Amino acid sequence: MGRTGGVPDKLERYRSKRDAQRTPEPVPDVSPPSSEGNAFVIQEHHARSLHWDLRLERDGVLVSWAVPKGLPADPGTNHLAVHTEDHPMEYLTFHGEIPKGEYGGGSMTVWDTGTYETEKWSDREVKFVLHGGRASGRFVLFQTRGKNWMIHRMDAPARDPFPPLDPMLPTSRAKPPRDASPYAFEFAWGGRRLLVPIDGGRTTAAREHPWLRDLAESFGSRTAVLDGELATLGGAEILLFYDLLYDDGRSLTGEPYTVRRAALEALELTGGHWQTAPSWPGEAEAVRRAAREQGLPGVVAKRMDSAYEAGPSKSWLFVPS
Image (cartoon, rainbow, N blue to C red):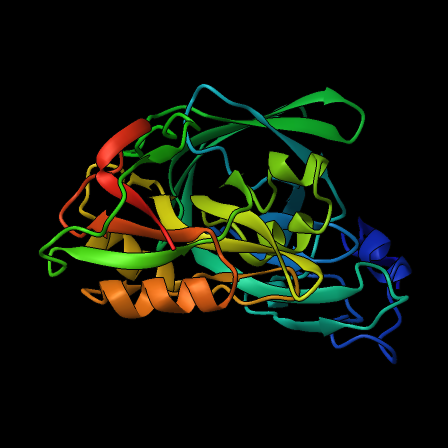
């Protein structure tokens, strides 16, 4: 149904892209009535490529933009926002699996929902204030060319800057510390150090290691900087993570090792190419003996009260096996 009472059907384009018999998405068969609501929804959409769909209620429909990197976290960075077709109001709560091969095929979840205030709305510029559970603040969408727009954050939220990507390095000594109780002991894997920054479901480390795209995408909109080591185990290359420098907008470099380690373990990082490296508080000789038996170069003793500091540090000690 293209028109009702001579009024253009705002969902005509939406319907033309979908088959109600093949997708679980809402496909209403009548033109939506006009409304004055101010709801919004942001959906995390794992389609051909990860993106977030921002939808603002306007005159009975959800005016929509696909934002590949999600909402910008600060005013210093603008993100691409691709203007898509208007969606029905039922999309405020839609989540599910759109079948492969259908338009937008992939998993969709509700990332946030709430209300918004309109400061300006024109064909080329939309200024608004979000009031959601996860997303809040002042934003502006502005058209650049055709369906391509940009989204800019107009206020500055409380978010720590990313730490410098310089690893903390152990100093060497011949024997473990006499008192092992202040230390956690980890294997020295003999691999190559790799820090992995994740932002907007993407990581620059994937340029060299494309398989890291899957890890970054699994983080969704969560920001992180992971510290680990590329090692060869059983003939396969695996990335072993043993520290977390940044988590969801907060720098952890000033926190003690125990806090960083607990936050890292809470991420439950397990995949075909990566996992969380084990750590044993206070167990110097047993870990050193296990390293020797496995042909590893040694162990690293890490003071459990130490902050993360770039470069060589006496808080981390390499002890050969």
